[in-house]
Length: 86
Image (cartoon, rainbow, N blue to C red; front, side):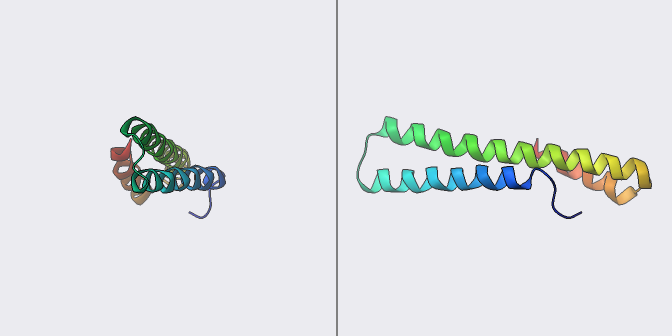
């Protein structure tokens, strides 16, 4: 299906998550407080979750469009498979 318009945004979100995760590792190594670490872990979870939602919703939009246009059984099967990640 190629690159979707949302992919640059997803990449930004995942890079942000990677930065937060690196911060968490550094915080643990430097024995920072559990509250601060938990807050950073929450930021990692949130960034990854938002990236996933954006990816899945964008794929569903494209998948449904192609399934309707092409009456593609494969596209419908893929649509059903990706919805489990919502």
